Image (cartoon, rainbow, N blue to C red; front, side):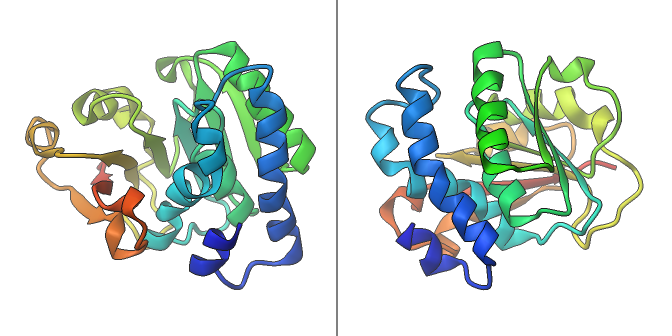
Length: 208
């Protein structure tokens, strides 16, 4: 938790309490359903929670925004973001039922009313969203094709509606293959000093 306090201030007691609950909840669920690498559970806060919250360094979602977490897995980045933005709706989507079971159990334990796990393929999701967030579920061109029709054309945030994608390594080939040429690349090392973030990036792809 100290690593979260290092980079985020001004959270209320409810938010801190929910963040603190993540460790025991994921340890308990991970012993039943492996949603986080068993070696990586020790690094839950830097590698999963703080990594997810990098999106909050770029944008403060306006109240009433609708966000889809594509391929949420165990609930990242959606659950940490939902804790930070209680007036924003998060639909946490994954095609694997056991992962959604964990997501909804964690949300229920946290009494997190603004986040909901949905077992579904993205193509089957109804409605539109201000942003689709994700952590390295697929390559960027594939992600863009999956979600481009799910992005609302009506914007309420200072950042243009679109995709916010967390991924590491050399992404230039994927970026060059995008059917749109407007994208923005943010190294997470600009915000976080730990070695884990040295080659991690946040990609913003506006969808118009």
